[in-house]
Amino acid sequence: MTKEKYRSFCDSCVKWLFPIAMAICSVMLLVAIIHVIMRYVFKSPLSWSEEFLRFAIVWFTMISAAILHHNKGHIGLIIFRDMLPRKLRAFCIRVVPFMAVIATASVAVNGILLLFKTYKQITPALNISVAIPYAAIPIGCFFMTLFGIGHILEISLSDKLPEKKTVPETTEKGGECNL
Image 1 (tube, rainbow, N blue to C red):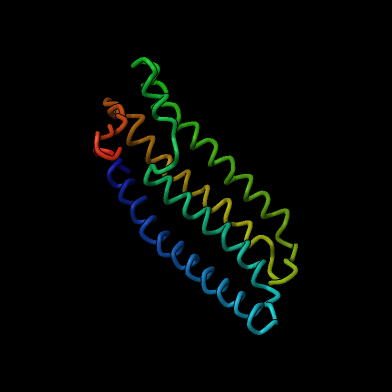
Image 2: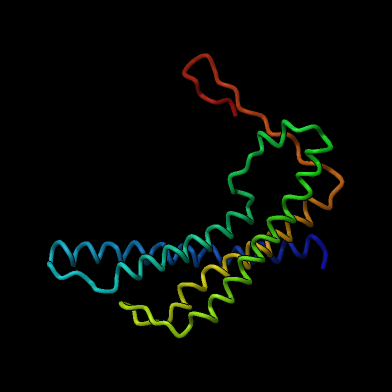
């Protein structure tokens, strides 16, 4: 598989992960509104809504983190990396994606092992297996690993280093940034 085909595969994964994340977010908002109305207007709170919201936010976070990883949107200490000498900077640019893939793959594998240990446990309010909410961890890290491999193919194995980032300057008028 070529770099371009792999990038296209990752892009298509994000195209269906994004609507899933938005659907989870929308359902969380709806359940939270219904919970507040039931608790404060009807004085009869839902017994399952808080547990559902806790599990849904984990799913939303892991899927969103994978999408963010694909778009290279995670917080990075680029300013410090760019202060390094050229050879050390090149080394960091090529090694960090490998370390990220190892870390996310490790969490994905350990998350799967956690699922095997906990799938018989049942949640108190929703009465579902705890493997369902816990599955967000290995699934999110699986996609982060896939996208990290794409970053390795894209950045680490190329001959050209990314340009150094510059800090936007402020204007004399109101401190606004010139982008």
